[in-house]
Image (cartoon, rainbow, N blue to C red; front, top):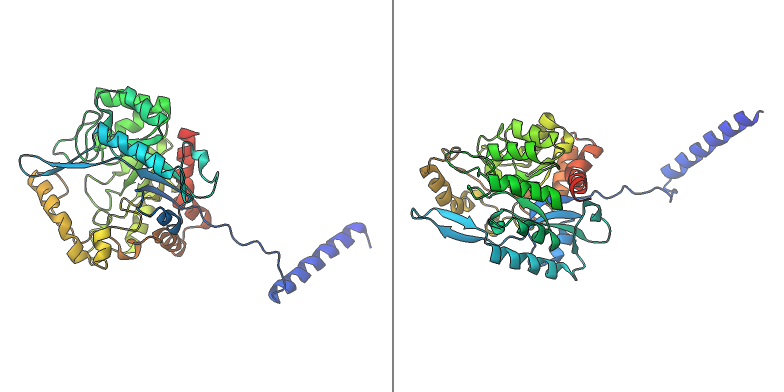
Length: 372
């Protein structure tokens, strides 16, 4: 017998023996599948930082801006983020996480997984704390900020917001601010922006950008949702968007379900590819608290949103002509939502590699591309 034939026979014998041992339960060398990496594109620090571990998160974009609610002459609520409050909140978050065993401040995308716990990328949900002083962007970066949103719903000094009767884009100060974000290494976030704001930011930015939390306008026609043109523009820049948990912007069906979240994800994949989408929350980590207290009774829980919704309708803001019936997908308004979403993606026919990208790897890629 030749040596080649002998080696071939030996390999076949080994594989056959291994197969029988496995069938008999005698194989002790099978490597278990690697756990998935879960990243949340927008949430908040919980009161109990151990909740981060319970959520199974490896990374998250974390809004630490401090919000002050004010009302205009007509009683319509507006939400302001002042320099003083947000500056103090940034320092407080850094100090709080300094000794936590569950999470750590991340400065680069490559920090994800560098030690045990969750990598936290700090964010402000508006450029309001910058005011007219562009040098504050570099100062915030030095102190740990890594994601910065242009505006939150309304027009400000930097950009046009989504919930205005007439849309506008980046202002001259906003163009200058974007260039400074690109220079120092802060990821521009166009969430809550008008369509002109989002398209112009995608066109002008020298780095990938995020729409950290939102939904698809092709499914729910609302200015808080992104058009296909916006989704493509963000993807063409190398960025991505996160699909969030606010169910009245995920579906107009009377009863929201996990399948509606999956439909949003699939739409982004169809428009811009699987690299263009991830998961966001936009509620506290354990879920929308009032709905949780109501055992996720959407009929009762939606009432807290209706006064604001009707105020927007009264101002003539597009998209508020209908009245929402729900706030959350009950199965996902809980701390273990990420594992549930991963299972739903598997069941919906996404491949393991596609699921890995959607559940976390896309966030890692974009954050690493911009931050190193």
